[in-house]
Image (cartoon, rainbow over the protein chains, first blue to last red):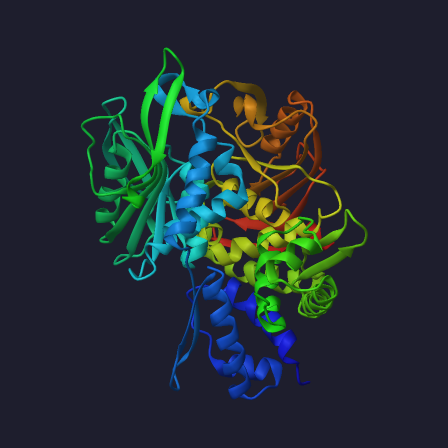
Length: 271
Length: 271
């Protein structure tokens, strides 16, 4: 059955959005809709233009027999900035301040719409780095890792501080937890990361950077490479960080526990 | 600027997909595109038809001043079945079998495409129940909770077995862990669930059902209601389950640790 352009546009838009970073051959669409490749090409140029004008992402058409179309989710710097500024406002409430200078984030990081945007912003920065896996540490980093991995269309792996029987054999490493200055242990299931992986580390909140350093060592243990480190929020008031090779979306500049006030600003991603 | 139908269709499709279970007024689209409401209505009927024909979901138009359009992600029973049958095949590999009759699932539950489909299948069953929050227990349930919450467009909350300083005040309850027959503790941040919530519980793997029972008690502590319980996989060979009020997507029927074999079939969701 031949499908009309209007219906093709709707279905192709959905299909591309569900398959980011995936090369889809024009033959696939041409067969699916019973339409000539020239018609499919025209459809794609409409989608490409609309995606670009509305900040949805980039649609590339690669010519040749091995060619096809690929959708890369992106977000403009200005749209990212507007969104993170909104999050900063939500964060700068004294109710969020917890003992020890921690900040309550579970509501923000349990909101699928917010997570989707955070994932989009982080993934946008790594579209060209051929990331093959996203890594985080349990538990709070998991939703961010999933959102980023979904935008990059790669798997994510979860490092754990406690061993679980449901992981099978694990590789464990020791690391120094900056906040407590203790040596702690983290583990990752042996079969979860192939050697030669290119790994993007993400986490929810960075204080001393010890956990991130631990994950970097873990990646080395798996004969893999750290492509980048991006955290949702960092405690910028913490001195003597153990790593400086990361970017943050949000900076917690100052925490005054006595007066229960906190200053929050755009993170180093926007510098 | 007036926008052409073809571009409107692409942008509206994206917008609806990003805002499931959300009533969007026709005025919003009419203003955004500088088009008459009658044109927007025609666009929506094309999108509605295409979404239905391709199993993308349901688009409803509600008339009147308070009306608008709402997109509900769904998946047909047959498509869900085909997908879960594929997952069953992936699961029935002896390499996944772990001591104690557990099954290695981290690769499946770390794959965003698989998670998105699992989320869609579970959410499809609860589109009419006015779920206001999804609950799970750390760590393995988190990706499923996020995928379901994203399809229902509601927040998710994470119950933890260990107390963390980044949660603020918590409510803790005791529960009997079926697998070890010990009394254990689980905690949930006090501010994470408003009273009167309608909660859908999800988890990755159910053996005895003790954890799920714990979550049900937790929901009661928050003066809220359990709307349903759905697990990705259940150990059907475990007798004397502590709860029978749940559905599963996958059944692990038999585990033979000596010969390292395992039988897997469609779960009670498909009964």
